[in-house]
Image 1 (cartoon, rainbow, N blue to C red):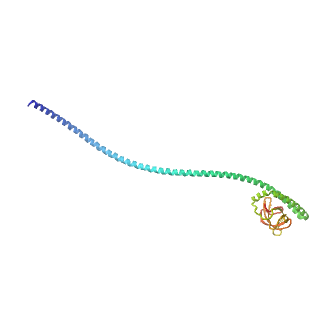
Image 2 (cartoon, rainbow, N blue to C red; image 1 turned 90 degrees about the vertical axis):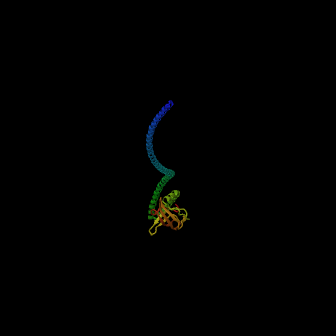
Image 3 (cartoon, one colour; image 1 turned 180 degrees about the vertical axis):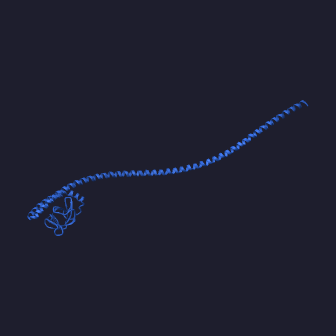
Length: 284
């Protein structure tokens, strides 16, 4: 064999050895890759299972989160509705409070007016009490005068001549009393209002004031004699109110009239019985 052949043979042997080594290495590497691939496939399958389980869990969590979101949205809507209702109630309460404040202010004003009215009424009551005390004093004086007149009349009945003289004296005293009565017209008007005396008895008869001189009830009907007659302008049909001090005793109706006296019957009864010495007036 030629040297070149030997060289090529050596080269072929070297290349064959190299190929065999390379092939052996490649086989070993392929087995390693296959083992790694199988491991990777197992790991990939495991990861896919875990990913699927994680996806399923994530989907379940998402559905739960959506349900929770819907619940929160419902609660939010309910809370907003409750808030709106509470705001409406608050506005209503505020309006009611404003109305109550206005009413309270009005009530305070009315209470102030009432207190002022009460003070005025207390002042009027005090004045009326003073007037009543004064009238009671005048009534007591009038009762004293009446008692004296009654005593004088009893004496006059026992003595006709003395009666005439006493009657003249009583007429003078009654004239003086009439002057005093005329000065007390304003006070008597207040008394008439207090005791609800009729002041509307206005007619064509003159304004007169006198006294009852006698009362006779022995013939069935009570006849009241007064010391006013034709000379004073009295006519049949005239009426007189009768009182003693602050006591209203009634109304009498004139039946017959002479020059200085008149006889009347009782038209309306008042408080107490009419007696000699009581005052008679056409207008209080």
